[in-house]
Image 1 (cartoon, rainbow, N blue to C red):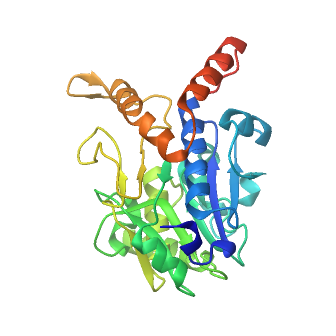
Image 2 (spheres, helix red, strand yellow; image 1 turned 90 degrees about the vertical axis):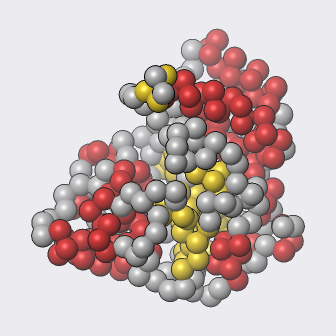
Length: 298
């Protein structure tokens, strides 16, 4: 779709979250921002929320971008007040940072995208969300992983890599209700949200709202060499789950998972640079310069 046909492009904020991930995570962020800029255009606002390292470090590791980006530091103080007592220090290591802060520009359509989720086309559900006045947006998954929130979520598989909220939507109410409902169903107090819990929390909270539009896995694939995920790109994008992790400590068909992921990344990488309008050769030279200077992250 032409950027001129993106509904409410001038009222849209696309935001990412990044922390102390491996170097490949910043490369995916660069590709995600570059593709989003081509898709949504210059009237849309672009924002990266940075945790666990400085905004200067994050910006340097991400590298040159074709669009102006706002870099914002976030801390535990930005955790939504309804969740403060449920997080401990492990939020520094997990996906809970995707809820920090909950809204940045509440007067806008706000699209939260994982750094390893790259969009080059507009999924139908995203178009419908942007055309609606009060709808929300979420993504489908290929397997259901909702933790303690499974019993209070509707049927289906959901992924928190894409979340869209309309102007004025206060997700705090949904989050609070989700925690209370999950505690009632499970018969215990919830104390901590590791990765699977945070995805279940977001799913339960956003499914309380209507209308809810979904991005299909055929449009944005859950892209990985590990079944039941797909090694192929979707029609509008791909979510490269697992690529941020410094190390995955298990084998797949008698080969280390890390080896599978690196081979998968190198196979798909040239196509992503072409879609982003970036030169892969320039990036390779920049990475070599970083390594010679000793500058690196996890």
